[in-house]
Length: 416
Image (tube, rainbow, N blue to C red):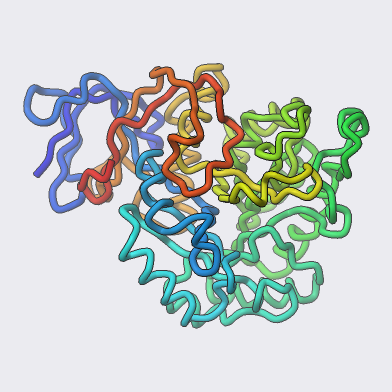
């Protein structure tokens, strides 16, 4: 038995923040108690459900030099992430039960936090032939996605969504129109023109989302847009939800906290996919998270080695690590008055759990004791070489930040 007492308990479901204690037995929360002197004194720091991070890239198999299960797990624990929902864009792609079984066994052996794998939507993530969704579900896939490759052919996607609807499979899609987006690395506008970089309009996101919503309406499938990053796409999402479609959406920490001007010095650590948007778009998306229109926030952890980032901006690989920087980056929005802590943890813990059908993300009896204790005010300067990920490609390097994870528990066991 373990009691964590004198903690400010964040309950994202009730939307409350109260001083109290949590009793843990056999890896499960058994009771929420008034604060007392019995147990481990949390000294008034904040206790919340662990982060469930949807869209984490692991390098195994094929790119272990960029990130392994062990290093990703250590970074996750240090960042308060108690469950990583991993992407299938590995080498080879996770598109068969055999590869998925290897992936799950490696995760169980090496990671100190929970790992829930997605599988590919199409074979080889090539967008033409549906993967074995039923068999992959049986093998433990929690969702299906081709990661950053949209399915171009609408007839193919219609067939996939029809099958996914029949098996109650969750489809996670990347809503960027692929022809318009090809080769682009920044968002179009005066700043992109000044930088002389190939650009894409934010309307590419709206176009793809409009198409996908029509197909979801046809098929009744359960659908999640991995990243909604611009104001133009929000009315489409709002209409789909108002019409009763089984649709949710997410956004990354980078699109919530950075904008297109961060690319000014051509620093490739700021090259992400979709590209960073305007400040107006950023603020609109932050408000959508606060309002609950956008359901989840994730790190979109994408490790890239030095060789793939030390290139001209146009040629450099996209993506940034985020497991360890997610919480302090999001504290920027809390301290700025855009979000309160219960609303934030609704987006990073409760809603991801609901989306995946997990009994997690809650502060109540019967929920797994996947918890984080953190200090939202602790200041520090981000040093990328202090990150536990193998790859160090964070856009927050050298930035003054606030918010430190003090302890992380998975099933009641302290892993950080």
